[in-house]
Length: 368
Image (cartoon, rainbow, N blue to C red; front, side, top):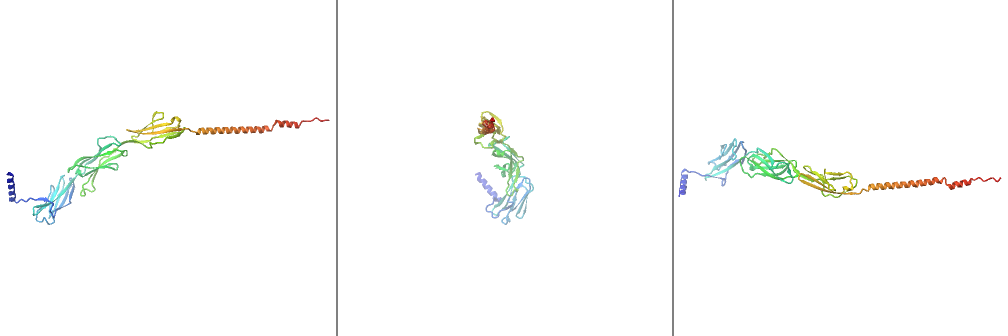
């Protein structure tokens, strides 16, 4: 009963005072107000302005105006101008309207985006200090300080010149906020010594600053990655055949960070610490067998197996045989020569010839 009486009282009051109630709408309006520009983007603290043509002819003789929270407005016929010398409100807009005789209000709202570039951008590795390890996952964190509106911000992570990824905000706020943007990455050996940085881009559309405002991290992070070791040669090696007396060089060079250390296990099962190359100056049969090289860098080890087969060196035997043969031949030649020479010399004083010679010259006695 009370509600019905109240409704009747309000109806009589509105009828007595001839109050007109208008509903703002863009529907069924053949001549809508037009703002220039259609959207307004302004930096916090800067000045701005916009104009509105309320109508071409439909609103003549009716009420038209601008509703604005700050600044001043002026009119030149149906052209209305809004001017703000210093934008100090983060949420603001303007409405241009006119009323029709059918108690309808045709209106258009000018949306205003008030922005503030980041005061600073920094990058870090979340919850981690010191070097990274190859294959492990880390979180890069880019902190953007006092930026508005953050929902228009895109953060790009870089490793050197390579883009690692892009992240946007899920926050909707008109006032400046400080937000941290995270990107998970997996460390690789190619990242060792490469600088990490992030870049914040405030994209405010075609009515905003062109090109879009870009702020790069104040400092870069040097990414030190522990990796390896990686062998520079093949691990699937064929047996090595070497002749005794020759020099033997076994190479298991590897790269890694930190630089790897090397340990060699010899055929006699003894272990020595040496460089990446093991050298035996003159190989003997005791040097044949299996050699194991282990290159160790930080937490990882790479292993290479060498199989060495020492073979007989026939060259000394061949040389010895040739020398002996030559000596025998030389001896034989000397013997033949001496024998022949003696025969020639003895042939000049043959006893038979001597006796024959003396017999020919025996003096016979004279018969007289």
